[in-house]
Length: 100
Image (cartoon, rainbow, N blue to C red; front, side, top):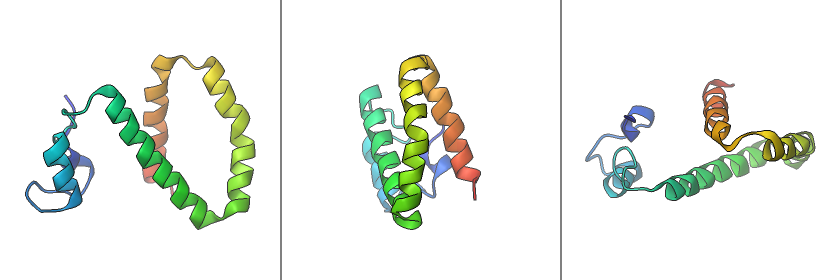
């Protein structure tokens, strides 16, 4: 069983926030979304985070990071079993949440 959005974000049912509207529409545990829709939502969120980070650090550090990570991403696509992707995502998300 998954936890509701309010466990992870500042949202209270009925508070009128965007997150409240989102959970009204999609369910408090995103139960109204199928797997593809959840992956599309994840893609949007990670794209937004990446674009914001690039704005914050600038293009040179971003270019350096891309050069460093391109072979890693290629190796992941080639060698990591699809069943391991969500576990790796979970590990990275938890590191990002607590990294300063």
